[in-house]
Length: 412
Length: 130
Image (cartoon, rainbow over all chains, first blue to last red; front, side, top):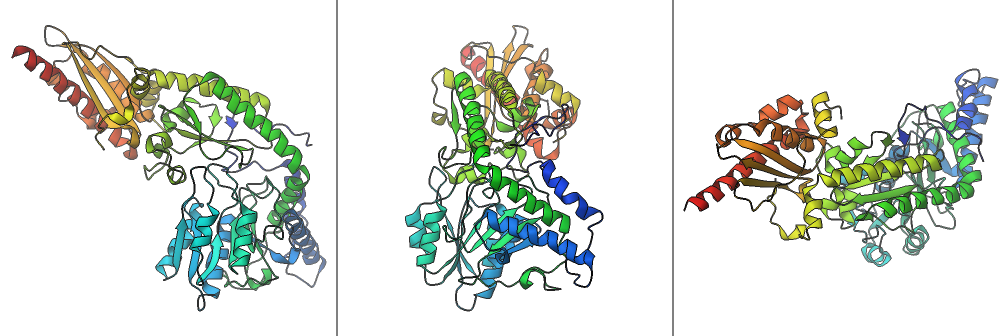
């Protein structure tokens, strides 16, 4: 294990938002540094040592990423991040095969960049089916099977949800897709490096990966594109024909090297890290449950990455709770933290009542989270939840035995 | 979101949290908002024999701006007649707390809460007079 136990300065809040982004592992930065300075060449330059050196860096990184997901290095292309990878996978496949097939299947809990890509395709005349999920956040395989038609070209289902951390049944989805001869794309931004992924075993045809979710740099990601059977894409960025023509543009060598190093560290430490995070997740949840009633974990707790908890603290609005726990950096599914004033669409898709969605916090644990930080977080959360419940009219009613649903609330 | 010092002060040290007996004749209760919308305010006024609001209490489920808005109005209504209290405008609340535009609805809710509490008090008084 790494000797580094703390990244943040002592005057910074405790970072518990590892699904938003992760700090870069210092070992990753170390690997990148030479490529910012003397190894500055263009990996496309074939005529001199500067180019060869840079290419060595990018190709080693490509192999490191490929190894993490059980792919061949020729099947990995670098992008600017998971958003671009998702755009390229979905739009690229849709456009290439549009003469034969025009139907795409995804789920309602996908990341916005998948949903928005699908919306754009709908506007261009493609048909998109947005599958619901069960109350535990997982896709019902029978629902998927029933949705596939002979016009379906692609199924895009995220591996791990960014809000609730649930792991979709990838092997089963992959099997269904292969049987029905439909391409299977998975947005693995939250999954790669956290859970074992093997594109062969899981029958995955396209997979999106993000650098900054796996302790690597921001601004880099990857897309796995299967070669056998071959998946074809219409590129979105054209030019010099880099990355097998799927994504033109000079490779950002230091970022590629950082992504590769991050992937390798994740692979080596995955098992130990998952065990450690599972303990921290349990410590957090047990600590909260010991001192607070009326808290609900959103999404399945077993089929879930250990670095995520999404909890509704009933009768306490999420943004006001975040204002209280100033020493903790978390995020909320409450409407009040978003410009739209709508509570989390992911929680709503699980059937979480709006009033409970407003009370949710997403707590993300990661490589640099310590037991001490978890204990501090539990104390702060308990203190502020209790304080806010004391001033909550809903808590008061609940204590008096009044059913909040029996009241006719005026919508505003 | 960056909030004003006044807003943060009301959030961190809310004034007049609590409840009066809502059945009492001298108490008016306003309960506005909806849990599904993420804000519920309960505002209560206690009116003295001289017609002045002698005390006010609140409980709020909502964001920091909603808590601060309701805390602020409990301070403002004290010592006022109910007619005077009725003239408190959401714009005054929003200005005093420097609410960001997306939080203006919190001040609207606080104004509604005062009005609802006054209406409840008046309804009780009318009933008593009959």
